[in-house]
Image 1 (tube, rainbow, N blue to C red):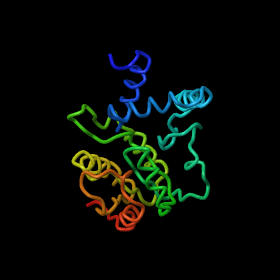
Image 2 (image 1 turned 90 degrees about the vertical axis):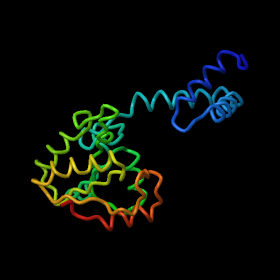
Image 3 (image 1 turned 135 degrees about the vertical axis):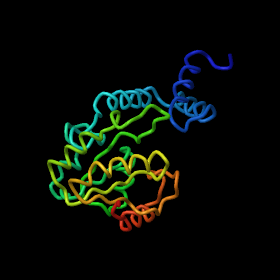
Length: 198
């Protein structure tokens, strides 16, 4: 064994993080070991507190340490427009553009039969209920333009059309690209160029 058991366990755990391969995990582990005891304790405590305290907003399902997230509580936001996204990372990416001032709804993924994910596993029913009760003027579907994203967009769009105007962001994004990796200008143009679903 190249590593002592505790170091090997740390590297193994770090490798479970997305985008962290064996070399990066090793680099991170060795960096952590060089830090002071206080710094390592602070990191461990931050991880534990985030896991224990961060949950989902009861309205939009975005990450929140409160029962209702900051965006949903903000009275200055436009209550007449809801932007539907697949993941909280998409909310963060869209917020960075400073172009959207409405509210959000996070589905928690996309419909993917190959992965066993149907509408029942997503926050679709709460969205339909929210839209039917609140009657917003517009729902913008901002879901990554992949095969699964398209399926989700069409499915959710059909469910919401009886209640309100449903649009989707323009295709300023490459097919198969993720919203979180798009730059602010591309996302801003995509929001401006949204169109109604037929």
